[in-house]
Length: 419
Ligand code: BGC
Image 1 (tube, rainbow, N blue to C red):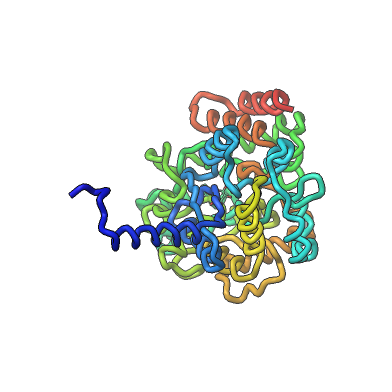
Image 2 (image 1 turned 90 degrees about the vertical axis):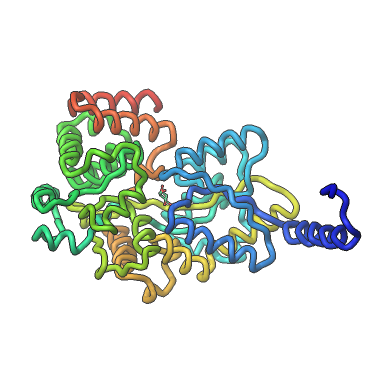
């Protein structure tokens, strides 16, 4: 039978289907993000479901790739063709870059109605505004400087959770002797940079971190302290395994979950993987500030920036922005994502112990000056500088013959070339 020849009944049914489909999708948002691992996808789904419960359609524009580099490339090509999504996961100073291009739409109506100015800490609110207007909404606060561990593997090796870099190397040796991979890692530029910035923080402290990775001070970038941090960073390779090149971060986390590896240095999106695997914090897995960084909190705030759209799409987009800061979303999303809520007024008693510690650390470090933006996660410098630093860090880490002195020189040049 000709597929196009339909009986009146079938035709009516499919017409009705098409009509209800078009009305359900009349007001919809297209959202670009890179939340594609097990834990991330569970978290993203919370927003989709909340939008659908309010009668809006959700077009998922997920672009795989940890750290979001691929997602940003895809976003640029969509925006250049004049067809950006309604919202995109854009963070930190990059929000300003998109704002300067005149492509972002404002959220001031929602922000005022919902009292964002009082809900959000000023550090967070400032990042979300361009030219004084809200153009993005924060979904969470991730802490980057964490160490995750499998307690059974630590026990089998007879070691405790390391609190300093020296302890980490010593524990690593014992773990290796016991037959496990000490440190799970994925050899990708952004993961190398994530570990590097944590080692720099542990070696040199928050003031130096800011001078080097936020202010791009050539003296700090080329200093003996930087060289020492680079050397320690490269020494961490001795704790990693040979199969790391190209490995995704969540595969590295699964090595810790499965007991093949003891530990991972990674932001708390890794906790999303432990949670998705049904594991309990403090029992089945351990979290601690990355060795030597107890007094610091490297923050990474995920946010959805809104593109300039019109009509029903704008209506749906404003609803999306409102939902994101409501308690229902903040609680459900962040429990799945591993982060803490972007608004500090929520009850954390239902969160796991790692999240509670993260919130306490955020509060304390904010008061004591230990809060620093993550370079590896786009919070410290603009995208071109970040890209140049990534190149230096990853080339150095993966080139046995490249000396730390040379890498530090390249860092100075990289920062100057793009200033
Ligand atoms: C994002 C997280 C994400 C992680 C891994 C980070 O840059 O902020 O939301 O889970 O990359 O993809």
